[in-house]
Image (cartoon, rainbow, N blue to C red; front, side, top):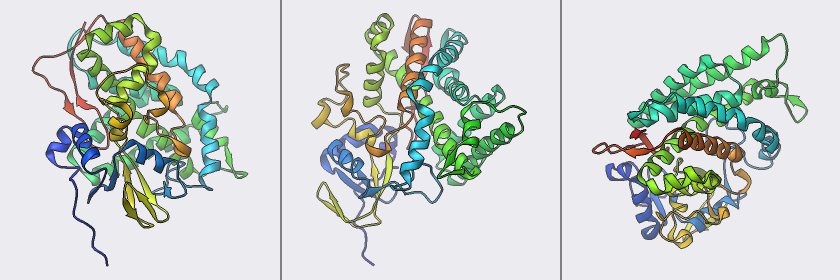
Length: 382
């Protein structure tokens, strides 16, 4: 058996975990395709990531042992499932949800106390759970269990506890199956996403429960963590940039490009996986079928060759260059929903407060791979 080359980096080294963006910035120039035991081959440059994204026949998405619909599928299987999922995120459905999302976010802002508080617990996680449940039309009784699930998931991620993470995944699936059972028990059918999935079909047959669970898990479990992370990143960034904070208060029409740009600088999701389907070469590295790649979104979106100074905030950037929601056939189908949720949430935060500011001597605590952002942020809210 051919031996693997030496590791180029250690994604779990303390200095990387403490400041992953700086570590990725350094590797992007020094070793744009780097090997590690933990992530296999990591791809850091924007051009290389884009090339992989637009060659799904060469770099496939079927990387997991578990069903992942449609994220973990390749064509031709992926195509009909992707078409099914897209029906749940049409512009009309997202537009209809916007006033609901605004009401949810406004209530979360109104519940905020003035003074120093830990933002992730006081706002970001709670708002993420409530927005998710509102879109799925899940009952308020799930708010507390899902908040608790998020806390335990974060703790297990920080501890690197794979056994606990597996148990948490099964627990989340149990919440989804509970909602399926509740919909089946209803006397009258409803039009919420879970109920529609129970009536939906693929290739002329009803969806199986395990397929619905996989679809909903992809929508919800990942959405919770990335939405909460995004709400934390945005608040932390604006607290440190008071002039921009005030500008966005005065000009809410700028929120959408500003949010995309802040999350380009500091992304909520660090990476995504691919598997090589046929021999290929990326940045001078030759790969054979079966090898695994990790696409480093957090590095590609900070590539100097595309964005210049990666930390420079520019509201006029070309949105087509931003890989916040991916690209190609696997681009996030819920991207517009996420933009609406983040836009109304941040607008309500800015409208409902006078000032967000850092708390002196209380540095934020970084989240742990694969989630970006912060696990704790102390802010002064007035």
